[in-house]
Length: 214
Image (cartoon, rainbow, N blue to C red; front, top):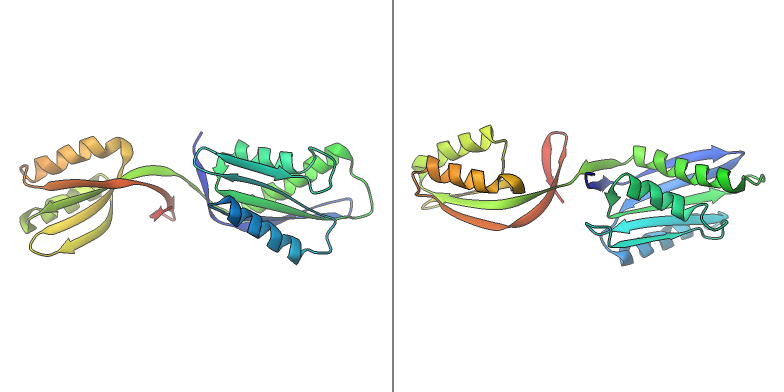
């Protein structure tokens, strides 16, 4: 299953028997950040009956938390967490606020309502599939710059930076699985003259056809 990253948060809503369920979804990197957002939502919706939440943090979902905030156990936070984990989304906080409509919904109704509100919220977010890549710095002389640019285009590699000095230093974003092949092709194109330096692994996604570093 692909890792999905929440690039831009959003809001959604679901109504069941006059109870309003308002979902707010945020990107978060740390648990402290999630707790701060939860406090802000509780302050904003101070007159609501419940502010239930779920969050997943870390590339391997190292931190997972959820709260029913007074709803019957397992009817709010856990279903919300199941939605996030089920869709492979991480570094995300979801808070669903409920304004009680006067009619009890029952266990099944609550599970459905909290899940539906969150799903609607996610539809108003920007989610990106997350990939890993290597920053590859290529140093060479000016005679080879055209060959490197051609290689980058044909391999669909993103040019992160280019410095023109005594020599040219071009930094490319190379998908992790292609790094060995690309390095060999660079050396072939430059007759072994290029100086290669891997500058670490990065996470990235694609938005509107452009690379976004995460």
